[in-house]
Length: 355
Image (cartoon, rainbow, N blue to C red; front, side, top):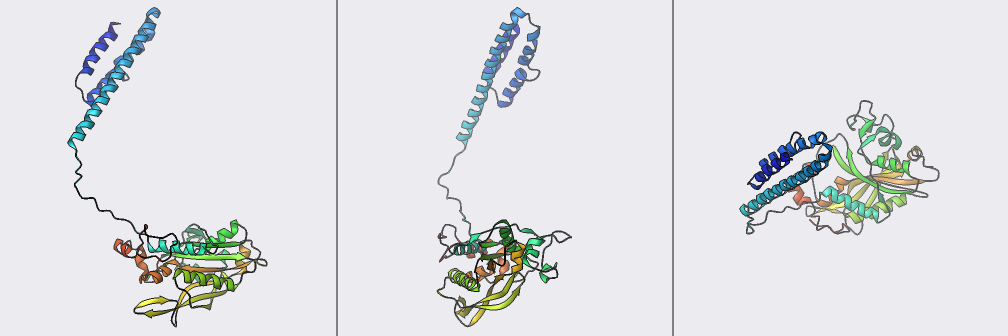
């Protein structure tokens, strides 16, 4: 029993002294480590006479708890002392001027996508999304694009494997295919997103943004398409009326197909949309080809509809007076500060926005 008293007297004296954290940790190791004094005493319990074993074990546990509590209190005392010393030494100068606060801007492309989504939602369109990495079937075959079509060539498409089965989507039309495969008609959706083609100049970029529209139902015709686009264009450009013409064209996935031109004029060096005798191509559209409907198991004898594709970057350039597409992707904060939108000033309706 004298061993326990000796340990208690020795370490109580040590713990009453002025110690730092490393010294406390060393005492803790000397007592409770694998070969520590308290740990060694526990190993002796089995060799003690049975009549004395219970009292020895009880005294040992009491000593262990007492020393452990003293060590914990000492550690807490040291930590509190360090914190108080730090608070005494450190001071915050409340007279210093505040730090510069820079608020971010919404990119014109993001803003334009929000505007487009808002306008189409008003006439019953929902927004669908799909992956940037697509398979060849959804991107080409299901959309009635023949094997020898120029759009499949390497100089237009970023293929991701030698078999040309995986690629970066060249348009967001595959979202239409995915939507029609997983659901049943009617469909009334838009699909905004990034697209990729091997092209780069003042008006083209390897990555750009498109929004595809699709409306499939019974008895849908070109009149519905014209009404939909007329509404969208007048709302987007915030004009009362728009001059618009459909010019015959060809797309594998629509028949008949058309390019849509809108009237404009240059007045005092500014582009005025909706007026004038000049024409500006703005989008492609047409009635969905029966082969596309059949590819997604939609009965083309009962259902028909229209589709359209619009360049989002092009719309942003026209509306906000941006003359170089490459600036959209150059990460120049000065450009974004000028053309971007203050997130706290954007109204809910997204109409009548000002920078």
